Length: 254
Image 1 (cartoon, one colour):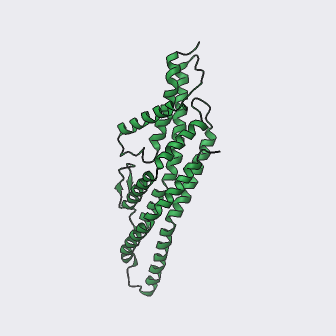
Image 2 (tube, one colour):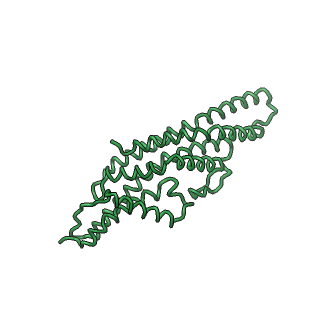
Image 3 (cartoon, rainbow, N blue to C red):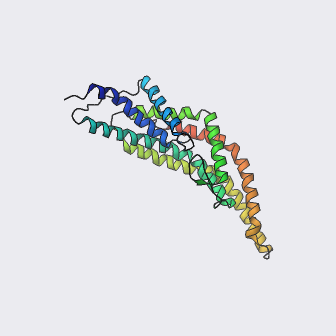
């Protein structure tokens, strides 16, 4: 018994909407909580319509018999695929946040947290500054187009309604995590070197002048050094954005 022609008609758009919505849900910038839900839903519908009109949303699946169960399984699979793709991009994007957290911890701002309006979680002022600055640079350089290209390539690598290689998706998540750690270390490396030098100087002063309270005196020095390193690091975010763009261009390309 063949499925209802109406179900066969709306199935491609339903699966495409499920993958696009899941992708945008965890995507950096577009998935931030500061973006209204109405705007995110509108973007998901717009992208679904765009990809459907371009012909990438074709599905050739036999849903004979238990049509509702088959549609549910296919939709759940597309949601899982979209979430995995979005998380892979999110992991690499979080490299800036991790590097800024290292800087804030070295400055002594680990307990002076504020609520990040984008992520909805507690963070430091330095982290918010670097995260917002990088987001603006990323959008100005056309990073949103790269994100849409990743979604388009996923529709070619993992066709709608077809089998999804979850092993390849898991490998992509692992590679994204390792890339995040590498880029975060490269971004935070000069900061760690500067604070290591400051710690060596304070250690020498503690031996030369034992009566000096190094812990109390070092706090303003750490804040000043942290602000100086932040002003030096901010221009390098453009180079970091280029590295992220290169990774996005290679993602899902065999």
